[in-house]
Image (tube, rainbow, N blue to C red; front, side):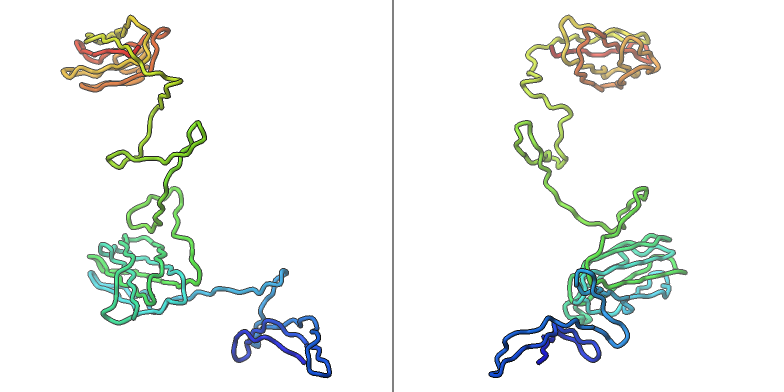
Length: 321
């Protein structure tokens, strides 16, 4: 007796899980089976392929959605509205759109509906299409039915291409070459992450934001073991500076030097070593009126100098020791 487990199919194409012969004794009991017999799956013309691992080769075939495709040009301010398409059997929508003139703001809208009825449409993704560019978008499937609505901008079109394709499997989001400039009309994917940082003790802490919502960073971390808190300072007061470099002298050994340009200055101050000049050559920084700079610097071997491009300027100096 030959038996098979039927899985599905119709007409010339039928799929069986296995085909085998049962061995039956005189009492009608099955006492064994032969090895499964290979099954050919065919529609009469094409035969399915089984790879070297015994796996059936399948293709998740998508399709062009003619209900929402068009190349008919639009007049200024005119709207194309596609036809409801059932996308419950698909996982992704791929849109290619090109227009020689710009759309209205958010002029390309992908709408979704649970019923496909005229009054039951809700806006999903929307995009502004710039003039003369070809754009590619991959909005996610959000309901049973979808359609595309495109509203042209202030100029008549002479070229328009709208080509949607329905995909059985999720696809890669639209991508860009590294040299391409991005703009707000480009498709994107939102990623949220919490940054974990490892301390010297092999503990992990979360990165934080400032009260203003900026990522909190430290230009230099002062740890008490390596950089103890300074307990002394030296205020040098106001120093007159002209077009010749003036040394910023301190009596103690400096750990940090603070320089502030006087608020009444009309020129620019340049900071550097002894070779800094009044054009800014060899300067490490410049200070305009009211600017200040803090340098982690010990001037024991190389003194710090300030010069200006204008005579009779002033700088305030101080240091942490």
